[in-house]
Image (cartoon, rainbow, N blue to C red; front, side, top):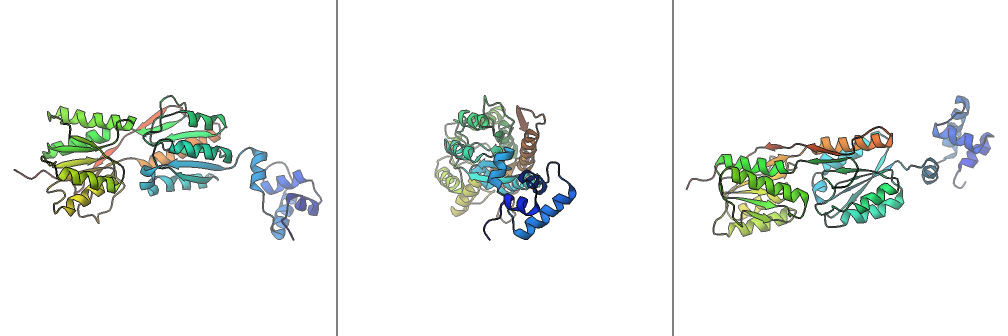
Length: 339
């Protein structure tokens, strides 16, 4: 026997195709007896519903696209897993797209996703993705959109982000309180809003402590452990070697730590290190990492709940919700060696 269709079920039961559809979907008016007969026969005949046709009829696919770059990948268990679980519990499947975080990376995925007719999108934009146009195209195609972990000015959708001024300020104040003065910030590019805010937090904390900034106080650093190791190796060769560094991300901090240890030095006795994100929580490191903890899981769950409210035409805040962060002190920071 070939593929069993809805017409086959209807014919075998002696009912209309519309009645068979209502009986098997569990929606619409149909007698309990007819529903029971239809379900039993469909199981016996091996009927499988055509989800593509069903989505055209109902105007929805129960599919949600999630786009995230390297930051989200590094916090996969804290972000993507909770999103997938929450969507699954609500009857939706997740289509995850891994962007590079480079300019237009998320935009390309959005263009590819629109024809798939997803019901919604949760997007974590990279530091360069500030153009509203692709997101507006998604909205124009009837896709509900939530921006997660960033803010795109001029886009009228629910957005949620951490106050990016606070992380670097907290990290800098912590190191200053320990007695450090030669502090280097391994920075995000200041071409992004987050990069601008974090640099401002670092500068304000140093200024408030009366510590002068130099051209070498901040160094734009790439993403990942390799970039952190390369930058730390350069800093170790400088005439005025820092006693502490603040890394733009935990993976960058991990690379910096590896470079310090490879040079025969100690963390934190020779150099203290602070990360961002608190995704490397293992105590297996020689010096467990002091880091800025972001409320990743809470933000992820809030993003899903907001999207589900949009699906249900329930009121949502179409503005920016700002989340706080906290400093988690571990063994990678300590007072500098006395001179």
